[in-house]
Image (cartoon, rainbow, N blue to C red; front, side, top):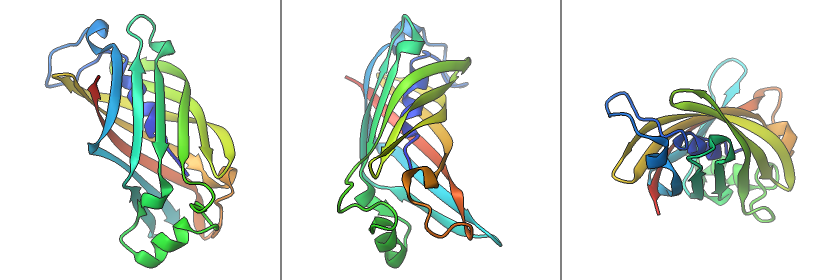
Length: 192
């Protein structure tokens, strides 16, 4: 499962602003941002036949966003998720997700996303493509990112995307549970 969250950071590189703020020049947004766990979240959901499904979040992650003001396409997003921090609100489900049937946290303590390209799609949006690695399997994934705002060296963005869990050998329970994991992420980063 994963971390499309990384793609969101690239949106910042566009130097765009939310609808309640004044426009920000690319040169103002250019720089390196550390993703803060305060004000940030990585949530996921997996559907189930007949309705319902599974929803949860990762409590521990870190990352950086480097925005290239001269060429947005050269911007970079790096995210690391610690799957041992997965939480669904149900202890039994959390233990199962941490087991070797899904995340295998005993042998795979991190999930990583490293962007390979950032393509601007609108005034404040972009598609971030990169390499997602989980359980020793690496695949190319795409995430949509939207800049939500920038103020006082702090940047906010929303990132979303879908990942096929079978590509990472985490397809236990299919077809009753969907093979598709939907990610919904909010990132807050401080220039530094």
